[in-house]
Amino acid sequence: MYEDNNNYNDYYSHITRPKKKSRFLVYMALVLVTSLLTSAIVGGMLYTKFSNEMEKINAANNKALAASSLGNGNNSGSSILQTALEKTSSIAEIAKKVGPAIVGIRMTVNTSQSGFFRNYNSGQTEGSGIIISSDGYIMTNYHVVQYADPKSGNSNNTVLEVFLPDKRQVEARYIGGDSNNDLAVVKIDLKDLPVATLGDSSKLEVGELAVAIGNPLGMEFAGSVTAGVISALNRTVDTGDKTLNLIQTDAAINPGNSGGALVNSQGQVIGINTIKISVSGVEGLGFAIPVNDAKPIVNQLINYGYVKGRPLIGISGGVEVTKALAEQYDLPVGIYSRSVISGSGAQKAGIIEEDVLTGMAG
Image (cartoon, rainbow, N blue to C red; front, side, top):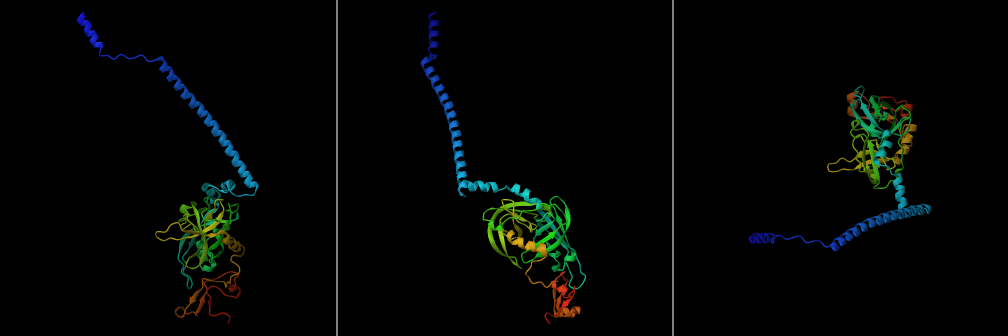
């Protein structure tokens, strides 16, 4: 028994018994945890209330500031920002507003070799146009429809077609054009058409939004919308046969966009897209005719078919008959007239198609 008791004591002497926790320490721990939780809850409630009150104060201050600025005729500060935001549409809204008034124009020239100096190249070109009246007047670039102009001598062999955004396709009539400013007007015989709103290009500022709408590369990409900014104003651009004063933009413009609209943030047409610089390594150099420059010219084209105040003989497609050509075709030396413009001075003087003018003023 003695040995057994000794073994028992030896065994338990190697076990560390757990100590009993103090009730005081447990109580203090509970108090501390409760205090932390209460502080967090109360603090969160106070912070939320404080934030709400500050928002109310800031809103009231901003409202008072805006009212004060407007009442005093002061266009600075928050009132300017508020006015700008109210007047600015998103690009999607601009496209919905202006898009229905942007059309595609196809010019088809048929081959004809009848008569002297008549050798037209057949083919098709496509561009864009802007509906400017509900009864079908459309503004575009002259180079989009140039062979439909009687002055080109090709009008009898040229067909113009207009493609509307609603998928209608209709033949168009050439009304008038001005090659000096690259502007023209055609007309379709439809009613109640959507009309683009023309803006004021004199109010443009460098850096403001510019949206181009048209048909880059033709009808396959009809109604394409690109966006950028007004890069510069009053750019003088030499196109090779004329010099134009243009708006510069980095909104993407490509062949087929010609005659389409350049639109501001209010959905107003402020330019007619006309040209881009296509040089290797150069991007974002597109140009548009300011709408303020186009308005008076377009109005005269609609009313008279030409721009008044410019001398006009009325001979279309005149070709010089040199001595060599005269001998070859048994004609006198002079100016060969492919066609004569109806109502012109040439027609009134008795000049007809295929005449050769050998002298003037005696």
